[in-house]
Amino acid sequence: MASIFTKIINGEIPSYKIAEDEKFYAFLDVFPIAKGHTLVVPKKEIDYIFDLDDETIGGMHIFAKKVAIAIEKAIPCKRIGTAVVGLEVPHAHLHLVPVNNISDLSFEHPKLKFTEEEFKEIQRSIVDKL
Image 1: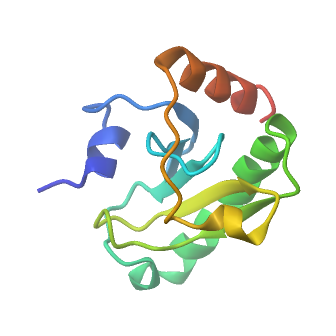
Image 2: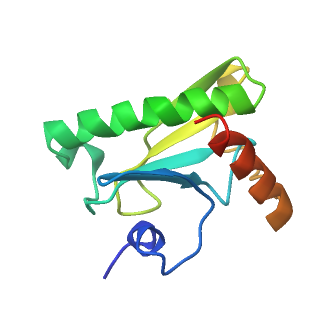
């Protein structure tokens, strides 16, 4: 069965898309720990990030760098933190999270809630910086 991320990539589930190319897809996390929290996924569905071939894992980080730079321009923060957890969805992915302190990257924080319009505004602000 396809992962939720594959369904998002295929347009079966809506997303707030930030960027896409032939191999990767970036979209806002709908259960964010920070405003602008974005997920970067390979279109090729592989569960564990370290099972990705070298070309894919390297390419994913290069793609993520472009997205992270745009997030940093759009969302006031000191840095974009990255995390790979990979337990919640069986599809390799990177979390790009605007941070000001190391504790901002904790997934134990309550998830933020945004309205659809707020998500769209965050999406527009990041996309405009790409």
